Amino acid sequence: MVYNALDISKHILEYVYNNYPDNQNDVTNLKMQKLLYYAQALYLVDYNKKPLFEDEIQAWKWGPVVPSAYEAYSEYGNKVIFLDKEKLEDKKQLDIESKEYLESFIPEFMEYLAHCLVNMSHIDSPWREAWNQGWGYGAIIPKDSMYDFYKEKENGEDEILAKIADNIDDGRNVKRLTSEKFWERALGNN
Image (cartoon, rainbow, N blue to C red; front, side, top):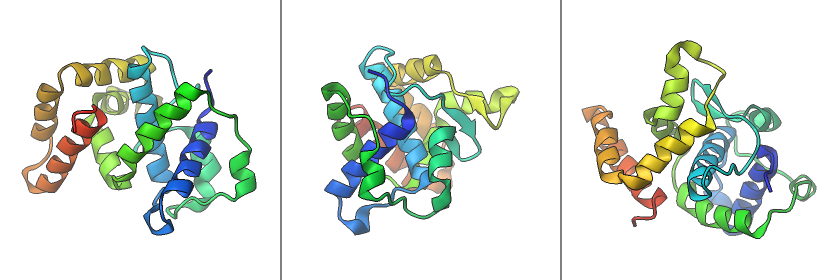
């Protein structure tokens, strides 16, 4: 079953609320957008181009954005998103496959700050190509582009990690380490 991004975002929030102390819940709208992007990208790879949600993802200045989810959480500005129980319950129930996927995905990505996820999405070619090919703000990031790029990462992560490290300025060594750790964990090579 394919869901909409708002349903997936509510499942992400529900998982975070139930599994992280309040002081660790830093899911802002900016971070939610990156969580949705990476959840979709890696789901496409894990399930042979099957999307997790139907919404298109667009290239915006601060990285990939799902406009419907962005709009739904825009009232929070740059503050942590907090939905009451009633709003959280207003979502489609996930099938076992999608639920298990999100339950393994969320802990791996929650430890990263929003700006780190933004930086990594800017390094990755799906966002960069959509943004730089003259389309700019609002260009759709094709699912095929996401699948191809992250499938390549899965198949040749050492070479890709070296390219990522080369694309980071020397003055940003902390981000270089974070990026390498990020992709090792995302690819399941802990």
